[in-house]
Image 1 (tube, rainbow, N blue to C red):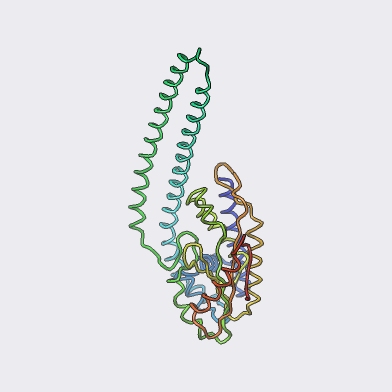
Image 2 (image 1 turned 120 degrees about the horizontal axis):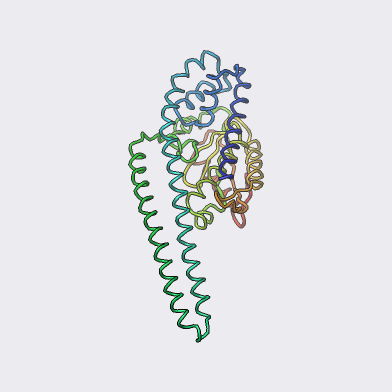
Length: 332
């Protein structure tokens, strides 16, 4: 819980910092409306509001106070949609933690029983009668603990089923990745279509975590999801100005328009170092997960479609992730 609170505080701080820099760059007064527009556009670039802000600022154009006023209706729509999404996401997190706790309890029951049986198996022949009584007592305790865990699992199953029904009724925004809040390929489609026509080209980075599958196998999906969120928070902090797309699962694409390849490569190096320096811990126990690293490939696009440039970046990422990973590769 401490790690989760710290992570959320870090993400809020990063978002507030980006919003302040945005307002300064656009020479906008720090009013509640301008701050809210900046904050929502930066945290949800694939939303209607985020895309409209990107469209109005394309080419380095600054937003004006009139722009902020005209964007307020989109801000209200975005906030209203976000409330229902955040509510069921919080509930889902609570149920995931309960399930993780019950799974831990079940494992502990099995370990305790195995340990007790091993201890009893070492008694001498003179204590056989007492040993039989002890075994019966252990079995009785085991049955009681299992029954209690089963009841709690049945109750949790009912809560999860009700939550699933609620989630199914929530309108889905296919433009935004629900886990991280960054764009999906669907949300970035218009931006992707315009890339070949950019006069000064663009640079693309493909990146992912080196150990995500191992983390999920060892700790479970909810822990892996938290690591992905921490990863995206690191990308946001180190790659200010780049558009982030969750392409699929553990593949994230970053786009930077009108800048040299070295600029994005340096950003990715900063993200790599920042990720390496983070101490990620399990909620509840505080147990360190261990070092989590990223690998990335960076490629240049000039008059080229995104799939072609992504293929080159992915080839570089394959080189970067070979062995222990933890590298950024931008040239053969």
